[in-house]
Amino acid sequence: MKTHLNGLLLYCRPGFERECAQEIADRCGEAGHLVEVSAEQNSGWVEAQAEGGTLWALTRILRWQDLCFARQLLFSGRTVEGMAPGDRVTPLVEAARELCDGYADFLVETPDTDDAKSLSSMIKKLEPHLSQALEEAGAFSDAPDAPRLHILFTATDRATVALSWPGRRSEWLNGIPRLRMPREAPSRSTLKLAEAFHTLLSEDEQERLLKPGMSAVDLGAAPGGWTWQLVSRHISVTAVDNGRMNPELLESGLVVHKREDGFRFVPRKPVDWLVCDMVEQPRRVAALAARWLTQGLCRHAVFNLKLPMKRRYDELQLCTDLIAEAMGDRKYVLRCRQLYHDREEVTCYLGDPGKAGGGGRKRKR
Image 1: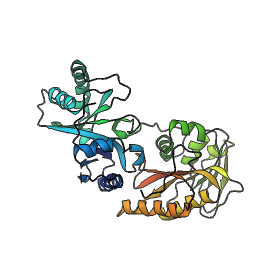
Image 2 (image 1 turned 90 degrees about the horizontal axis):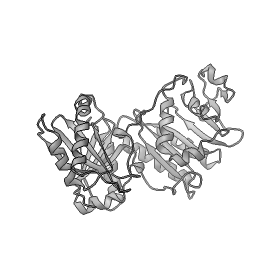
Image 3 (image 1 turned 90 degrees about the vertical axis):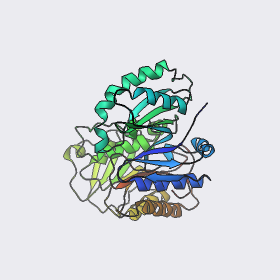
Image 4 (image 1 turned 180 degrees about the vertical axis):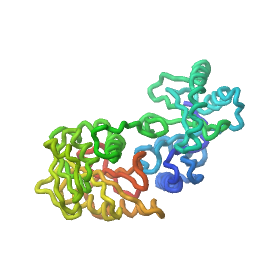
């Protein structure tokens, strides 16, 4: 397949460009490839430049699923600048054809910023014309491994063409999941756990590991947003919090409320899941999750790490190193991601590789 790659293009939460840049530089370095990373604060995206051979090698190594701060992982081509309002289609189709000789489909996107959202009306009008022009140019392919074309508009006259491959990208537009807030849920925090399950677990893992009749402990549960997400899957929950729980949850018959300290609580018997959204020092929460797993108190854990305002990337590395030390020689799966519904935090999954899919990870993130 013919491709002319110029660099890497990653979407991220505005304000976290530095962390995204640090991470992709580290991941490429670990793979033996140096890249030159550039990022503009609050832009919502990061670029990394490298030689063509390096970029092609990285297409076979890098996966969005292995990154924490990136919402999307793309391989970019040319940036088209100075487009005339009357004809943006022609230069974009030319750039797309230069980048690759066949696409499965295409998306037109913008960064997740207030300024970029003003482009949405223009993009909506442009999309059908682009689709027709790409079709007429023979830009689409039926090949099962054909990449997707992404067109990222950062201004009305400026857009970058990029591509992504199945299994190595986020499937959501802009890398942002579209989740509805359930009416019955007691707080919006329920969307964090819903997104965590969709993002940190594969479809197969969700089916195998989130079965009705399973058991869970929710530390820092009140008022019950994460507990509700588990109960909606018919999982029994011990909700641990000194605060008040949602009365309807308590009436479900699937919730037992314990007014205890989440760091001191120990279940009478092992549970399938530990979930934790306590506002605490991230290293303390990381150590708690590792202790529950190593002591056999749970089989899987999802927990939030509330990162400090400064040195956020370094703090995450310290937490993952702490988990590695606590796990010792035991194999494990650790996946960390800054979710769309997170803020100054990341959400992590920690589990047994024999129960989750994939191999164990025992390296610095």
